Amino acid sequence: MNPALVGVALAVVLGGVVASSARNARTAVLGLILAMVGGAFLAEPLPDSVGLAARLVGAVLAGYLLWIAGRDADARTGGSRLGWPAELLLAGAAAVVGYGSHGLGAPAAGPALAQAAAFALAALAVAPVVNGRDVMRIGIGLSLLASGTILVRVGLAGNPDALEQLLFAGLVAVLGGVVAALAVAARTDGLAGFDMAVAPGEHIRRRPDAHPLEPR
Image (cartoon, rainbow, N blue to C red):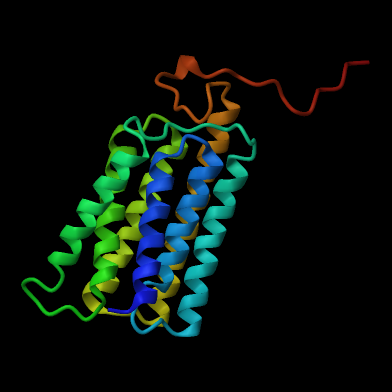
């Protein structure tokens, strides 16, 4: 087993744990960036330079847009109700299942550690996607799920070609941009943090940024 690959897989899982459990929005985004950037290196051998660069650019761009959306240092998101120890145990159990099931039913061309990390990210994404009540938390859960899906592809079929890597990078970047735009809209609605409005009447209309000229 490649020790460097083990370290990358651990970094991906720990990043996912931070992203799914942190209540500070920027801390959660940093964990997500670590998981997405680490996922680009979780392959054996490493992808070609074009594909790797595309994945890194897509991950950093998505993270940067989410970072801007949580621009206030005290911006809060839902976080985990059980805390990071429970999330870590969940991720560890899912990683064991992913590692043990690698290659069952059909030969796998990619590393087992990629599938282990993929199962961990997918397990961590369930609670934010299903029970999330704010845009940022749901968006982070969807990003973790997308990263886990990409890693399952790598674990089963090996390295994608350059075009497929570009498509993955575009998916990650677009998802991050959409979530960031929705998060900014949620914050400007006047509700608490990134919370979604339950009914249209809960929206608080803002005054126009440009004040109209007084009639003469």
